[in-house]
Image 1 (cartoon, rainbow, N blue to C red):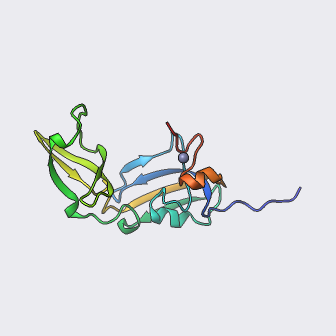
Image 2: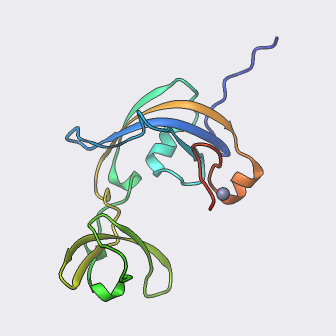
Image 3: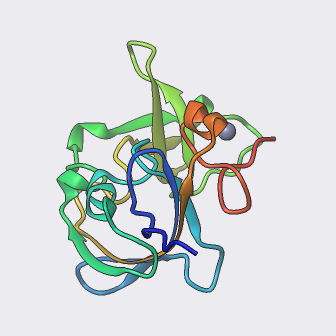
Length: 168
Ligand code: ZN
């Protein structure tokens, strides 16, 4: 049997990783460990740019400890992204809580994601900054699997299957 070269991470590969994300103080913000791993399509901006860049060329079994600055993570924090809006701007049947995520349109009609920062009576403070904007991201990542993406996954821009995207 011919020995095959190990697959390396490149554009068009579906990569399965386990990760733990901590902040600079060492507090865990998110982790896949003990749960399902994360599958992403490399080159499709499914993950933050700094993480995608560091994973390029790596192979299964490698484990990386990375420190990713905000510019290569969720971006710098923009104070102009914070706004106060009336409670009426949200659906009546939704119990608003800090951290909730909504899709909205900006003045020019572009789709944007907003997060609820706080709720005080009839006033809701919303933030267009990702909750991790302005933060250094410390990732401990291990590469579990690499495979070629299907044409369908390439056209959708995300992986399908057990740890990927589910269509409803
Ligand atoms: Zn899809």
